[in-house]
Image 1 (tube, rainbow, N blue to C red):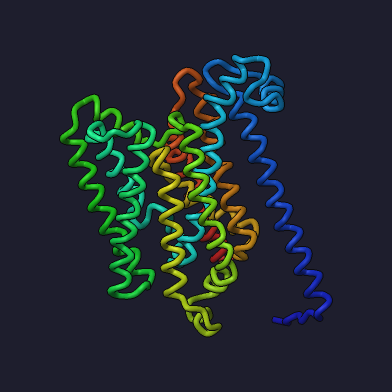
Image 2: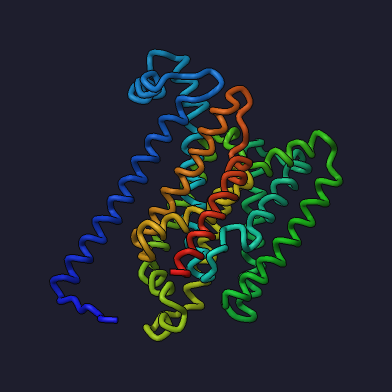
Length: 354
């Protein structure tokens, strides 16, 4: 087979063409996200035309039409913005997790973060009334704290042994089964009313989103961004293989530990307020890499955008098929994620066969 060698000018041209192609996909994802934001705001039990939504957005929270302003800014906008934040956090966390573990089936929930958050939420729902804290704060705080505890347990195990991917995965599986067992115990002990609240939280829903929860989640996600940006080249290098990364002077163990903590924070910020939402962190990274490749300068923001698109599409679809009783987005993403995962598996197999 003849190998074609490119001169420096041709290589620069190919690089610029690839960069423009990637920027086009980033622009397309932002456009899709904006369109879904408008559509999601337009649908609900009371209904609202797109032109009224646009007018309400331009008029602001203190517009002349008080009914539109109240519905748009106090009820629907918090749910929509929380969907964007949660989707972006899960999508980027999934890409980071698949990179440091070198596992295409890794997601933010691989290491037991979802199960620990569910246990923390169930614990707060059952016993949180004894604390003098508002309802919107006690459940997310407990879920967030349990997620960090799970992170600490796995991090301690990795520190005692090594930060190798198999150690992190095995430790995560052990933590996941432990918190799932504790979660089941609380459900067994709960009264029917409390059990209903726990199960609804585990479904994953945007209905209880508020401006307070948005600010907290947004602060956590924003604080993680600078640390991820610092390691973008290192993460891209790691995708070349652990041996190659080490030969280039990369401290793989330290990188895994740093990104591991960031993934825990992103996942905790996402699930603490809306509950368990599956498949977003698994599917979004695969779609991003299929479109723009392994360069994390492009794949990471695209995975975040696609995560937001998937979650808002699930929210919109839930309102569309059941306007009076909105179906939780966690159910829709789980149902839709199965065929999407099959498509990814079939695509990977077809590419290997070629």
